[in-house]
Length: 99
Image (tube, rainbow, N blue to C red; front, side, top):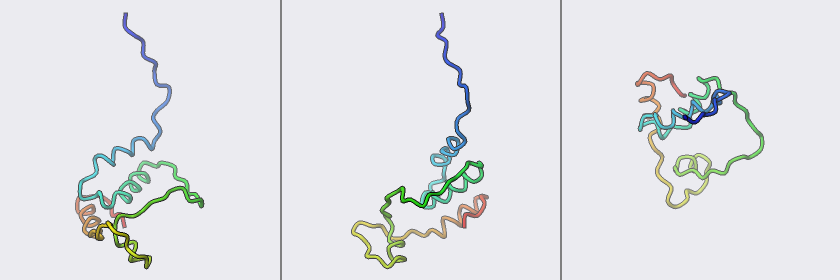
């Protein structure tokens, strides 16, 4: 006798489908992946919320933000990539502009 599998009673949350963009994103877009992900979230109509509380600690691995903020650049931080060429290539590939 075959085992009976439970039926799914609800669809996956809308945000779950957006995750595929992280693995299907073109290699050149990894440097602007935050913008690409936000684009897909907006396009999918996923509800978003913002908080005034600090919810994340992030140490940037690129020098540009430290220069912009007038902070010393920590050891081991990579040079600033050419983000503009990434944005241009994204648009040239037929995607809507991200900036």
